[in-house]
Image (cartoon, rainbow, N blue to C red; front, side, top):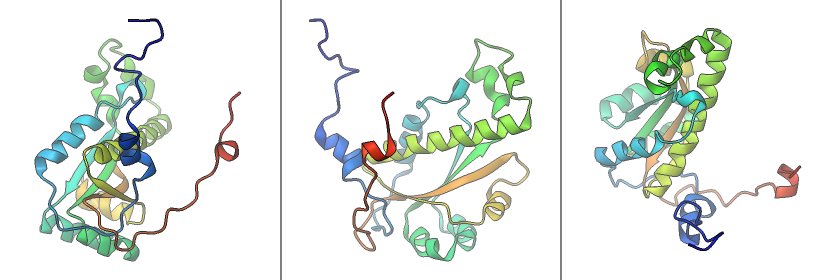
Length: 204
């Protein structure tokens, strides 16, 4: 292979793929009744789990709410503006973080057996869990779009109530909530502006 020629790993995705992931992708506020198969949700997790996190900590925990019974438990805990869209969505994901993620580092970071001790400080552990679970949520959004799903992330919910209802007697805490499925154009906002490179970024 000639020097500098693209390899499989550094060749860019097609414009169509980039459009599906980013430029034409939209946050959905309404949903069709097309179901999402459990096998697709498993595939979504399998892709998401390969995204990098600090010391491979992977603190995110995922609850895919699909049954009417589970939706009935969640809906009263959603803010008024998020309730109808959550009721309509075929899947609602509670993305949470495990504050005891360090207990798994013997398995996840085996080449450094003492890595769990790095997170003895609760404040550092909490910061690490929140940052990296949020990062995993970003991976999940891109993975969902890559699999043909639409997403609708939300932060309007009763966090303490979701914790008590879905993560009792554990050290897992909700981060944010994301509707998943096949979106409709109902209540779809016009594309909102984004900051330009010069407004938001610099090369130093």
